[in-house]
Image: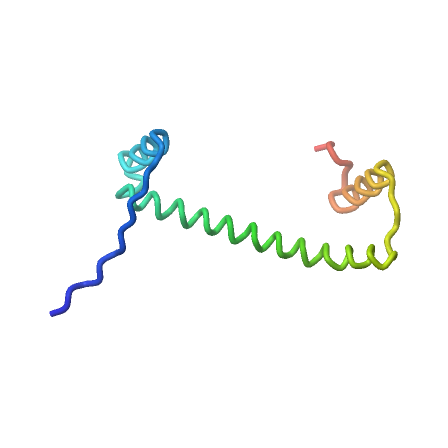
Length: 102
């Protein structure tokens, strides 16, 4: 009979605040163990990080063609005031009200 594969173990150090909060989550029954708290925290971290990376990649893919247009001299010069007027008008078009007005 073969032994079941054991879960790899990793020892981590937590600040007193994180340790206390982790113990509280276990004590209230939200989690069965400190390991479960850490696993959930890491899953959330990686999910958030992956979403951030996807958004950053999308921004880069939108931004790079625009930068290339500017490099070719195809851009339009804006003053900060002109840009703000344009952005406010665009916001109103998309949201049906002026920025800052609920």
